[in-house]
Length: 317
Image (cartoon, rainbow, N blue to C red; front, top):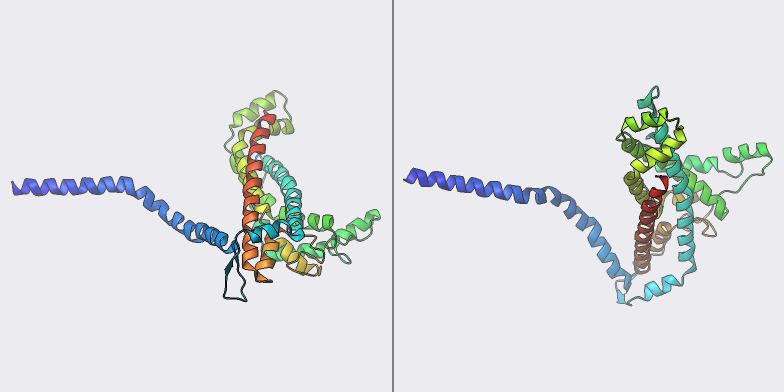
């Protein structure tokens, strides 16, 4: 009798452990991510919101509560709106051509080619290159007096362009750096999605006489639309947070004002503007307010891009 009771207790304990394992294990597996996300994502976001409501500077231990005054001042700050314009301008110039070129490269690499692995690996080389090295090299390429770009333009009778001194020219130069770094990376993401498209669709389209461009428009793009939505959203978020390229471009080109984005703030982005407020002027309250407005801009831009991409996807069907 005692043996049967002991056996029943052991079975009950095993059943309880099995039930707990089934119900609690999934939460235990994902817990590390959410713990880290709360520690390094949610908490800084909430704390930044609290700091933005205070007059908070590094030079004083007194943090006076001022409510929404930082936000009110920010909305009337011309430098903030200039940084906003620069961010959207550089983001559009760099993201749109980058994604179009990435889809086209992926489409070419999705076809039978010799040394496919070599070409696919080569696409990742710009992305793994140090951003400092990239900006230093591109700063020399876009140099006013001895830059390779101006030397090539001189073949067509165009005088040397001061790339870092103008608004449009500096945006083009910085966008070129971003495109060079991220086009191959995005092309590999598109290529991975294209690999899942049934080959029979391309074979049937080829028999019907469809060109490569037609196959890309009518088959590839509609079939990888979820991936396009993902890449566009992620690229938009990244474009709204551009920091390293304009920061280092200002230092490498000698345009003056490393964190100011040139003498006239012509390529100062929102991230660079926040960096300047926080770590040059030590005005953490004002910088926190700018960070929160920047966060809202990122969410808004990502949402608009998501909706537009989903609507435009139907145009290729």
